[in-house]
Image 1 (tube, one colour):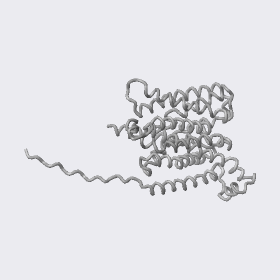
Image 2 (image 1 turned 60 degrees about the vertical axis):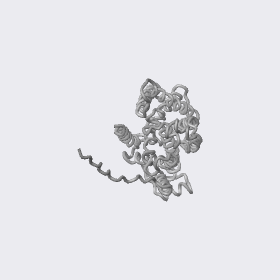
Image 3 (image 1 turned 120 degrees about the vertical axis):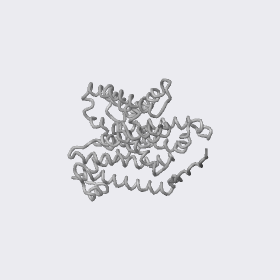
Image 4 (image 1 turned 135 degrees about the vertical axis):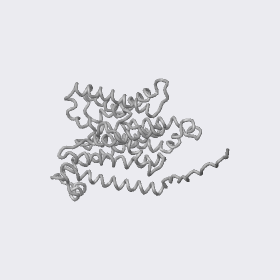
Length: 349
């Protein structure tokens, strides 16, 4: 037999990693987009307001006509969207980084459902109605759900995989949502003023709600900054991260506290809003590459922009009524989740 030399393989084009300049330009562009959406959030709604009126409402406010709409209704709504979007984006990114699970999100893993259940219990059983009182229950519920999901996901002898954790989160979220709805039906009067909160709506909130959750989101964001340097190391796995000098336990503990504060505060302020933290890291990775520090930086800008866009779309699609932002993000996020699961399954074959 005559031996044939193997056919030369086609040359492969190396993947170009984003440069620091390109990342900075992309981040600046995202910041400009966020600014445009903030202006649109103040001007667009059931009743559109001119840009000149928006400007006068912000700089020379008079309690009349459209200026009142801007200052009293849309400014608190926009500020809340910025804070909640920031919290959801950072918490989702942190969960994916520390858990090394590209399918993770505070809503999918049941963290938002746990926070919502504890808030519902505080309102129905304890009669707490102010956000300064039930926000602590949101933190407790977020932490409880997070621990429960990982305990369920790690139970048995099967290997722990991202899909296994995902299924555990879906199951825990379903149970907690069912219990929460049962409590709402049992105590309907307690939730007359929170019907839109259940769907993840941003309207009807006063500025004091945003002020109440802002300190906790600020602390959570600061903790993200503290652990950002070690996220790239922990992405290699616990053993290799330790050999490279990374403090895995410290990173995990601080990340747990940050996710609890961010997800709990977001749920207390606007109700359970899902898929924002899932979509943003995947959407920005083509601009940032695998560097988690840049992904977190982009999440600070892109996640609030996404939530603001969802809120604006919700105001326009069924005028004169409104569609809660949480429903809009679910419409967009569910197909993204299906695509990610299918891609993960294809990568293993």
